[in-house]
Amino acid sequence: MERYAGALEEAADGARQQERHYQLLSALQSLVKELPSSFQQRLSYTTLSDLALALLDGTVFEIVQGLLEIQHLTEKSLYNQRLRLQNEHRVLRQSLRQKHQEAQQACRPHNLPVLQAAQQREQEAMEHRIREEQRAMDQKIILELDRKVADQQSTLEKAGVAGFYVTTNPQELTLQMNLLELIRKLQQRGCPAGKAAL
Image (cartoon, rainbow, N blue to C red; front, side):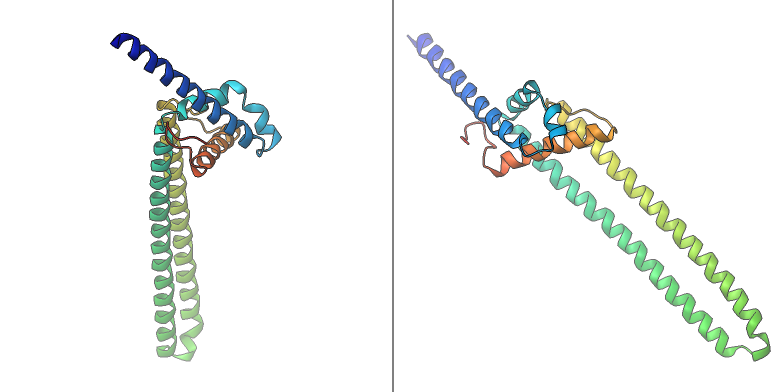
């Protein structure tokens, strides 16, 4: 009798899982209609069904939320690093300007053109150094963000989320961003947990 009750419960669980899968798939199909038609065409029924299956137990929602929080922290950190560099550059410029003004005030009039030419070269050299430091910082930021994207793609691929794998192809990245947006919209609608209904 216990085996029979267990079998009935498993069948009921299977039916509930199937119903949740259908609800998630239906919600995804509805959300896909909001995407540009070029992306709608790339999201087949199979892809959406696989995505709905991956979302069933709610784990993917938690993973996406965690990745989003990590991304925000990374972006904030990189932004603050760039701000610090800009502030250092501002202080450098002010300091050099003040140094030049003091030197010009102490300079004899007949030496002023020579001093100004030397100061101009010093100013240009500093501006060149500042541009190089800013370019290097921007490259560092881009590389760090690219690494984060690859980490996110790898994490979602390992979690079995349809459409995710490590790529730098702009079209594939856009498709993955659209898939993430679909997941986020489902999450905002309140369907994160496996037992939650739409």
